[in-house]
Structures are given as structure tokens and as C-alpha cells.
Length: 431
Image (cartoon, rainbow, N blue to C red; front, side):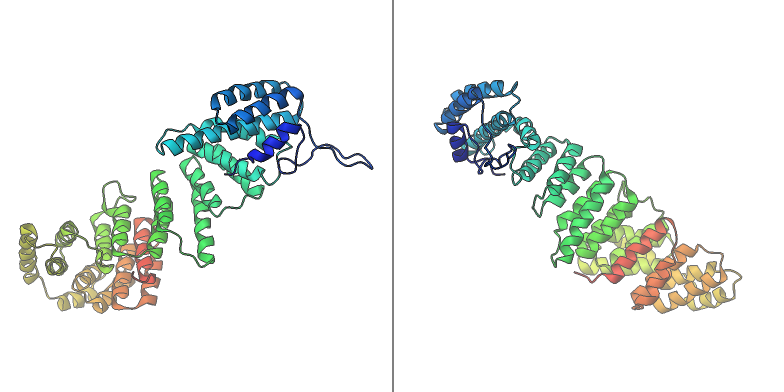
């Protein structure tokens, strides 16, 4: 932020008259006469002139003494110009000290709180130039932000915006102040607004904006809002690593947003596979174990085979043993064609759903989808679970519209969130 001109101060302090470079005249205009500029009282003018002279000479000790005298003389005065000059000079003095300290040592500890009081005086003073007031408000807001006085920071930043302060970062600063303070919901709305304005202007918002929104929403235990920001992030930056982070943050890691059962986690592991974001031996091994325990040995074999082919499971004895167990289990299974026939004749949809799962595990998506529809028609099943898997089968088969319809039919709880993540994958081009 720019400080008041030293030359402007020198002229004022020498003559005791205001100049347009420093303030706009605030004395009422009399009929037929030119307006007079504001004047300093003699005591303030004398001490302030000495303070300014010492500052120009680099004699900060003398400047401090004279500045204290200036403030003492201005304190009881009813002259707004006395108070204005004392505050502006204090601000200039403290800023100069900070600049000198940082030049000598960029890592020097700096106490910026000493700027708060003079800035508050300058903001409130009617003689402060209109063009300077927005800058003072912004700077005061930044001081409050740095002091972790976030509600105050929001107030000053919003006043700066109302006063006409122009800075592309101002809206983001307001969002940050709200997010770091108690108004997380309002901050998320402001942050989203900043993102939308950048998108509308043909710009791509930085990835850090999305990560920040996720971090603050998650820290505030705002699960639904966190999921919204996870989806925004992955839609904007759909890399394999980001997909894995999104899925794990949502439901596969300790302390995740949602507490999921094994069935629900399996459908997230399927999304990891679809998005090509299975990253290491843990991912492949955990996925394979879950579907094996669920009675889907063919899917376990497929996942493990992909893990070995990628080199992620090389030398993993546990994975090799699980692969052998899965192969043996598959040989002992009944033929799926026979199960499908029985499922169609069953009184309810349970066998159709289970057989659809088996087909899905073998990547036979058309057969799986047909049986999921039978299960939904017959009933007696968890409709949200079956619709999720019908959507997965259709999505993996390339039926985008059908998959979106199936995912849209998932109505409640974590299943609705899982379906929403699958829909985001379905509608987001891969990186």
C-alpha cells in the first residue's frame, strides 16, 4: 500500500496549509469567496515539522520524540487536520521503520499491529482523501487478518470494496477471512463466487482454490459441503492422483467424510479402477480382498492380475496367495447362466441382484445390467444399491444416458453420494 508522499508532508508542515495532494479542503465555502484549506495548530505544526525533518535525515530516535509531541498536541485538539496529520505521520514513521528493518533482514520479526491505530484514525477522519480511504480500509483488513481477527478483517475488506477498492484478490481475501473465522459457510459461498467469475472470464481457477475449500469444509465437519467441493475439484482437475484423493477422503481412509460398509466401499474401489487411479499394492490388495470376501472371486482375480501387470504387486506374496484362492473359489462356483435362469424365476430380486454382481465382477456389463433390472422389478432388494450397480454396469458399457438415469434414481445416504461421484466421473473428461 502506498504511503502519503513525503514531499506533500514537507510542504504542509512547512506552511501549515493543506494541499490537494494531501487532503481535499474541508472548510465550508463562503458565498463569493474561494475555499480556504485546512490549517494546523501551531503546536502540532512545529512538532510535526521537526518529526518530518528528522525522518528525512534518518534520525528515527529524534523523529519518535517529535512524533510523540505531535500526537500529544493533537490529542486534545478539536481540529480534524491536527489529528489527520498526527495519524498520517505515525503511519509513515512506522512504515519506514518496517521497511528499513526488512531491508536489513528480510526475516526480521515485524509487529504490524502498530499500524492499526493510525489507520483507524485515517479511515474515520473526514479529511482523508477519498482516493486513499479504500486503500486504508484494505490495509486495515489485512492487519486484522494477519492478527487472526477474522470477523474484523471481513468488515474492513467489505468496507474497502464498498468504497471502491479495486484488486482482483479482494473477493478471495474476503472469502479467506470468512473461512478462517467462524463463517465457513459464507466463505465457501464467496470462494465459489470467485471461482465462477474466473471461469466466466475464460480463466482456469488455480487448483489451490478447490483444495482450500475442501480443507476448510472438512475441518468444519461439513460433510455435504466437503463432497460438493471434492466434486468441483475433480471436475476441474481430473488426474488419476486427484481421483484417488477424492475417493479416499470421501470414504476409504480413517476419518473419512462418510462411514461406509464393505458393500459401499467396494463400489468406491470400482470407481478407483474405472478412473485408473489404483495407485499401489495396498489399493489392489484391499480391493481384491473385499470382493473376494463378498463372494466375487472372478473380480478379485481380475484386479490382482491388473496389479501384477502394472508392476504394483511384484513380489507380494499375500497377493499371490489371494490370487490362487480366488482361482480355486471360481472353479467351484455354479455357472452364471444357470443362476441367471433361476433368478428370473425367483419370487423376489435377491438372486438376480447377486448374479448381477457376479457378472459385473467379470466385466460382463450387459448381462449384469439386465439382471439388475430384473432385481428392481421383482423387489425385495436394496434399490439404492442395485441402482448404483446398474449405473456402474451401464457406465462401463458406454451407455452414458442410461447410467446417469440409474445413478439419479439413487435417493439417500452414502449411496447417493457414491452415485454422485460416479456421475462426476461419467461426465468429466479424463486428464
